[in-house]
Image (cartoon, rainbow, N blue to C red; front, side, top):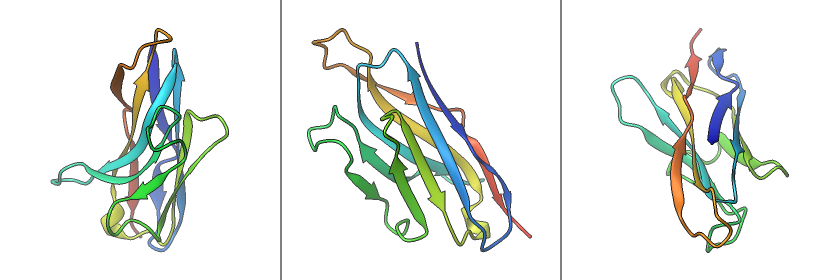
Length: 129
């Protein structure tokens, strides 16, 4: 069983900051990718940022941002490689969305190269005065 769980959402004033956390836990052999997405009301889910894991051909720790996301959004990874953070600064009302964590995970057995997609339940971020 694998679980992906986000935390850290909430209500913040415009110009404020918030840091989201995501933990992937359970039977995990390797992780290819972890990423943050967001889904605003009436809009499609969009990528915010991603980081490669030890199962990636690019090697672990490579961080990519969607266009327009770098600068106010910063993704980092804990030493526990199943944990990632999204630090958001200078937040704007248009950043209001449900933020989802995604992980591409190999549950094994040891020689398996079979990765599956896992999503968290999402955490609400509301930017409003």
